[in-house]
Length: 85
Image (cartoon, rainbow, N blue to C red; front, side, top):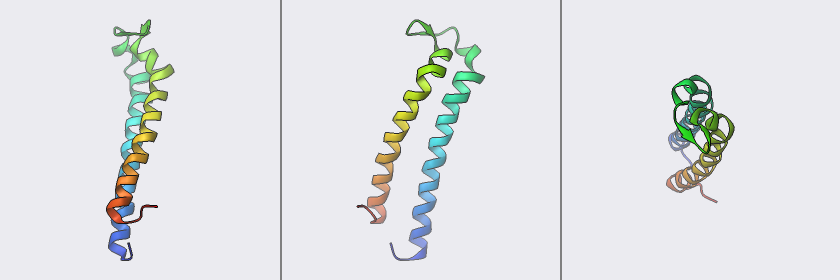
């Protein structure tokens, strides 16, 4: 990855992946747990309504999944640009 175009493309792809992760996290944490909670209150999951579940456990689980997805996707991106470890 010696030329400037390749470096810019790599970081552009990296930033795009980060924004996707942030958007998903924000939707789950704020959208499902706070904004859409009244709409999700009729759906039961684990003995409580889905909005409460997202606020207490779902957002944390989605965050953990996003961490693993980001690591997997970045390893793939590193291989594409020849900067893997």
